[in-house]
Image (cartoon, rainbow, N blue to C red; front, side, top):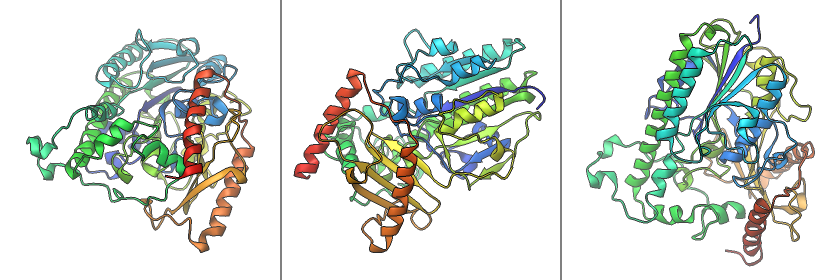
Amino acid sequence: MKTRPNIIFINTDQHAWDAISAYGNRYLRTPNIDKLHRNGTSFKNTYCTDPVCAAARSSWATGLYTSETGVPFNGGTLHPDIQDIGQILKQGGYRTFHCGKWHVPGRNVRESFETLYYGHNNIGAGGAAYYDSASTHAVADFLTNYDDKKPFYLQIGYVDPHDVCEYLHNHEEKHIPDPVEQGILSEEDLPPLPDNFNYDDRETVLHRVCRRVDDALIHPRILNAVKRWNEFHWRYFRWNYYRFIEKVDAEIGIVLSLLQQTDFVDNTLIIFSADHGEACGSHQLFQKFALYEESVRVPLIVSCLGEGIELQRDCFDNTHFVSGVDLLPTVCDYANVEPPTDSQGDSLRPLVEGKEVTWKDYVYIESNYWGRAIVTDQYKYITEYKPKSYEDYLPPGPNDAQLGLTQLFHRNTDPSETKNLADEPECKDIINACKIKLFSQEKRLNRRQIVQPRPQSVISNWGKRLQGYWEHGF
């Protein structure tokens, strides 16, 4: 790599880590994402920083965790003094371009990037059938006409497979017969239920209030609709999810085909990832928001379709833990641009090049302001902070006295996370070791007070609901 490379960051929305045919999933076909894998390194232990769109994307943009960015949920607002990846690379001599979904509230994408396509109204949660095709057309025009001598950074935000959410919304107000009853598909056409469709109900209070009770804080109308589903409804939900992934894979294929016809394919690095996953029936859940693997674990591939960039090809990295905060320092490393000194992430470049490097032995995840998780080689530790009696809008932690309930899963013997070990006496030391990692990470964070009225209102309202359950039970 003689000159600074062009960098393309392709991201999908709500894409579970294993929903790729190259990874062995036989219920869908993703030939174009598979091509990225064949020409690069897939990191199998990649996790989002927070399993919801805006929060995870704020970490991509800044290299910070969501308790630092001001976006601990979709209604947050990025702190205005934090630089984003477009601003940083622009100052470093790159031309920076954005196309498609951005969803980092509080930051005008048009001020940080040259926008190829973002719509008259900002692209929101749904509408992939329209937006994704328009984004691909805009990228096609860009790739066939770019002739500047400056290197470029282009991020392409596809909406699918997020439109599976729109599929779910269809069930809120009406009963839809299952596909076998309608004669759409046979039972043999449907993927099976996940092996963790049933679940251990000793979940955190935060999770139950957000996702389980009838008046849940998150999507209660969908929740009450799916309670009426039979097995075929759930399997058809999974079938539809895979079709949305195949649609976005086709869009990616057009981009890759056009890139291969350009003169700069040899010197263009491609990074592919997703903001968060999709439960897709696991633990009888839909969408994201949870700290189970299906919601927090995401694909990440670093690739090049030419020969000009050194990397391992057709390679699975099963060893190293990767987080959404690692995107910005990785891009900066390849771009030869200094990342912000407060970035929480690390560059993946030495791992992509197959070099030995000291690496973190766990990953840290936040969720719904109060939720926390630590993932190690052997264990997944999930916990929560109780709402403060007086809310100061400073994201909680580290505070042992404020911790609530705990889940602990053995990742090797129970990868589906169905047996909660938190109450096992022999696991007390394991939980304490995970707490040490949790508090150590949180001490390194620049947790900042949420100051905007709207997210403050969300924290106050949700906190009151949670306090009610802590005081009076379920």
